[in-house]
Length: 390
Image (cartoon, rainbow, N blue to C red; front, side, top):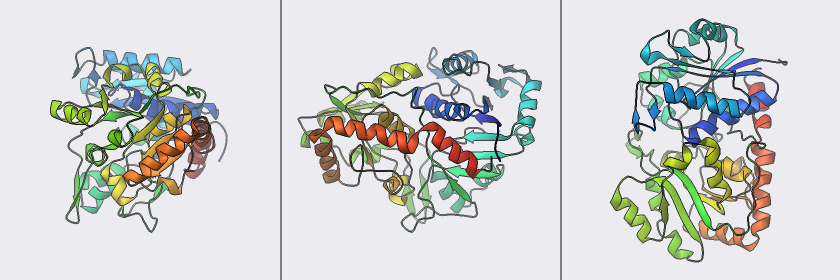
């Protein structure tokens, strides 16, 4: 099939108005729109949003609605969004009337539930093609293998599942495939909105995100598969001591003072991402002033070799910043060796740092090239649409 399609992207950028979550959706929206499609962003669920003014989850959608409206205006989709606050009743709908929103569901060619942020209701089921875009692989599959009925029902409400787990089904992948068919995709990045920013004087190897996250560990076949990345960070605690000539910064939410002191005692600079991530376009400045990224992945993806690769890493690469990322099997699907490096051991990390520093300008060019050839938004979105039959 070909031609202009009407596509709805369901998301949670208002509920979670931070840079990482916001860019997850913006890159998909821009990629689809630049292909010439009629693209809409919709937030439509019963979850209360976070309001940074109150530093709390609230039942007032004012901040969430404003964040969605301002952000989409910046990317040229200022009249292509809707926010329905189901926690305040069926009728409260912003951007579009409830009636127009229901027409949008009925008329669209595809409803993309990106990161599965929305539990589909009867209104969503009006759509002729419902696609679950799994941006955080493995947890769903472990829960399915454990017989969790709710997870099965959530996925079964969709016609197709497309996953960032690009290594699913491979001989070295331990993720259980339990009755669902998985198409593969990866995170798109809009290169116009993420230009390269070379600066030979940039100092720090950085990453940004969360330190500890509770509640998503899964026990399967007698083993616990962890969700929180702090378990993996701690395996490389001595990195700054082994490369004292380099600066290493963790821009992470580290709430426990003892954890923060431990990291700082091993030579890490620890900063907070909260303020800078509230403005998605200001958030980009953190990437531009970084020298490179060093980061870990979730234990679930590392041990089971899902092939997952993150949106954050894509932002670094597009910015022309080399990336050293913990191996999940992604290196089988993306070009590695100069701008992008996969590691399993500390020696791998040290070798990657040496390679970057031996030709920093070349490593930066190679990083941008990975983004251009493998992650560029229209390329990723075009293949995605072909795979789902549009």
